[in-house]
Picture: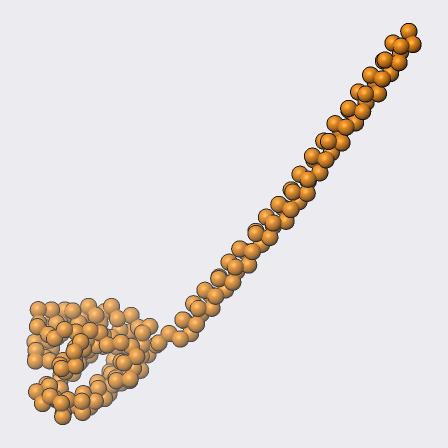
Amino acid sequence: MNKRFLAAMMAVLVAGSVFTGCGKAKEEVNTPVVEENTATEEVTEDLLNQPAENTTTEESTATEDSTNSTINSDDYAGIDPSVAQEMLFVITDGIELPSRMNMEAEMFKDTYAIDPSVLSSYVVSMPMMNVHATEIAVFELKDASGADAVKAGIEKRVQALSEQWKMYLPDQYELVQNYKIVEKGNYIIFVISDSADTIVSKFEAYVQ
């Protein structure tokens, strides 16, 4: 009887030891998991914060560039050329002219020096190569009061072209001397071309 009792007690003690050991093993396994999760959360939080700062910087830079562009815009470049450009196409359609390009706003400001506040639109067509004096300009006035300022600007341009061609190519100089300025309605055209008379006729027929 005593042997059986002792055997039973030993079995209980062994089982308790095994159970306690399993509990410790579980605790040891679970502990690193908690530490790993904490480290992961810290890294994730750092990564989420970083792009937000970069995005803010990029958006701020873009805003500054846009503001500077608006502040530095040229008054002449801000004029919509569509009406004058359409008229230029109509009055030169079918006429053989040297290869041309539109004068840039900066050059227009320097050569014609016309106050942009008197213009609704304008375009100056000039040769792509500097062996031709051909030049055709269309000016749309905001009202008739701006006509004198435009004509004064044209005369300034004629004087400069005369000086340019006088000692360079006599035939082109003569072409400049035969320039045309025509005003009708709210439009003024300036023409230096072998086909000046035809261009003027087309202009007068186009403007009602």
